[in-house]
Image (cartoon, rainbow, N blue to C red; front, side, top):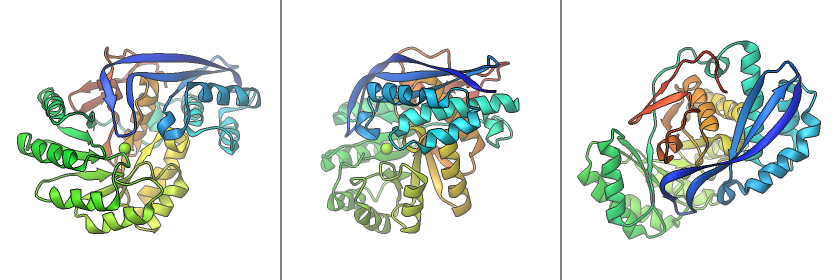
Length: 348
Ligand SMILES: [Mg+2]
């Protein structure tokens, strides 16, 4: 199995409603899809969305990265291609993730098993995802949250912003109006240390599953203070991209949990390294994603099956936000539940 060609295509999937966080606002998922074809005619796909605000890669950057490495990878076995890919310093983590998932998928094909089995999973267990409630006015957020709950989604990731009073009002109202939902709070680095502690104090009467990345990624000292003060678990997202970041956060006790995303760490093979570290060190994880296309979500879901013992929360809700449901998903979304659809020939 040697790589013959690597082709790219830019795709876009409109969203039902704009997706708004403290960092960005988007109306469609834009991503690069890469198809890796081998000389024996087997092929696999990878995808990378443009998330300039997070990985510093736009569509053009991802395309340029892929173009720059094509020649080096052609003629190589996917295993060797993986190694060469991750040795590259100038290629961003999203571009790496797309190529990595295609190569790992090819290895799974060579192994003759679905990806989750190749990654060590046994059976395609049922998963559960949260759903993101975008940042908006109090009324809009309450309306969106109620709508989600009524359609069977009972784990809500609430995006809050720099207006701390608004964030507190949203969480208190939500907890009161929807007492049965699990509430996850994601500040996307919007708060200071003081604001974070103020928030924690103000909402201590309500049950929150976790608070995600309250302060700016590089401020690990504040993150540690918040983690120490908070009875609610603190989850590091933008502060952890790679295994080295995860080890630093764990060893320094900077956060209770970590959010792993294929686009941050550079793909499935790198996520596996992080998840194995988490498994060995008893770190509870969230498996998250950017706003992504269906094939990279498929890949993440296979990973979620294989590592369900260390993944406490799954944040793979992109397909629920698409305007029209995707036929390329290997999983069926029913409310919060995600079920694997057994097919004769898997896409990834
Ligand atoms: Mg986050």
